[in-house]
Image 1 (cartoon, rainbow, N blue to C red):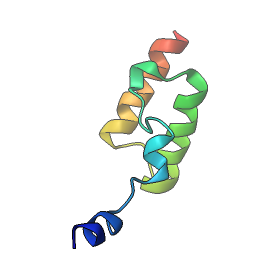
Image 2 (cartoon, one colour):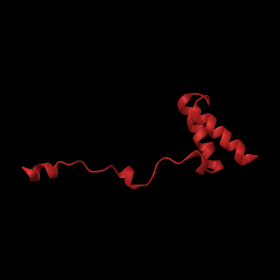
Image 3 (cartoon, one colour):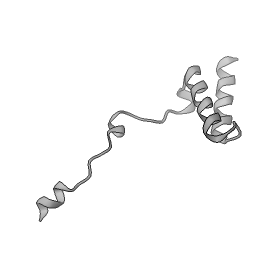
Image 4 (cartoon, rainbow, N blue to C red):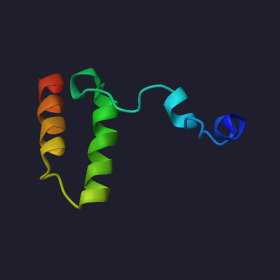
Length: 64
Protein backbone atom coordinates (compact mmCIF):
# COMPACT_ATOMS: atom_id res chain seq x y z
CA UNK A 1 0.00 0.00 0.00
CA UNK A 2 2.85 2.41 0.65
CA UNK A 3 3.89 1.98 -2.98
CA UNK A 4 0.50 3.18 -4.23
CA UNK A 5 0.65 6.35 -2.12
CA UNK A 6 4.08 7.20 -3.45
CA UNK A 7 2.89 6.74 -7.03
CA UNK A 8 -0.16 8.99 -6.68
CA UNK A 9 1.83 11.90 -5.27
CA UNK A 10 1.26 14.97 -7.46
CA UNK A 11 4.33 16.49 -9.02
CA UNK A 12 5.26 20.13 -8.69
CA UNK A 13 4.02 22.33 -11.54
CA UNK A 14 6.49 23.22 -14.26
CA UNK A 15 5.97 26.94 -13.61
CA UNK A 16 7.63 26.70 -10.20
CA UNK A 17 10.76 25.26 -11.77
CA UNK A 18 10.94 28.12 -14.28
CA UNK A 19 11.88 30.63 -11.58
CA UNK A 20 10.08 33.34 -9.66
CA UNK A 21 7.07 34.76 -11.42
CA UNK A 22 6.79 37.91 -9.38
CA UNK A 23 9.37 40.67 -9.20
CA UNK A 24 9.34 43.55 -6.80
CA UNK A 25 8.29 46.87 -8.28
CA UNK A 26 11.69 48.37 -7.41
CA UNK A 27 13.45 45.65 -9.47
CA UNK A 28 11.48 46.27 -12.67
CA UNK A 29 12.90 48.09 -15.65
CA UNK A 30 11.02 50.87 -17.41
CA UNK A 31 9.91 48.50 -20.19
CA UNK A 32 8.65 45.94 -17.67
CA UNK A 33 6.71 48.65 -15.83
CA UNK A 34 5.05 49.73 -19.09
CA UNK A 35 4.09 46.12 -19.82
CA UNK A 36 2.60 45.65 -16.35
CA UNK A 37 0.69 48.93 -16.61
CA UNK A 38 -0.79 47.82 -19.93
CA UNK A 39 -1.77 44.52 -18.33
CA UNK A 40 -3.44 46.34 -15.41
CA UNK A 41 -5.29 48.60 -17.83
CA UNK A 42 -6.57 45.62 -19.80
CA UNK A 43 -7.53 43.36 -16.90
CA UNK A 44 -8.82 45.94 -14.44
CA UNK A 45 -10.15 48.56 -16.81
CA UNK A 46 -8.07 51.36 -15.38
CA UNK A 47 -5.12 52.36 -13.28
CA UNK A 48 -6.86 53.00 -9.97
CA UNK A 49 -5.59 49.89 -8.17
CA UNK A 50 -2.87 50.11 -5.56
CA UNK A 51 -0.48 48.06 -7.71
CA UNK A 52 -1.03 50.32 -10.72
CA UNK A 53 -0.44 53.43 -8.60
CA UNK A 54 2.80 51.94 -7.26
CA UNK A 55 3.91 51.16 -10.82
CA UNK A 56 3.13 54.72 -11.91
CA UNK A 57 5.10 56.14 -8.99
CA UNK A 58 8.10 53.94 -9.83
CA UNK A 59 7.87 54.91 -13.50
CA UNK A 60 7.91 58.58 -12.52
CA UNK A 61 10.93 57.99 -10.27
CA UNK A 62 12.85 56.23 -13.04
CA UNK A 63 11.98 58.82 -15.68
CA UNK A 64 12.75 61.84 -13.55
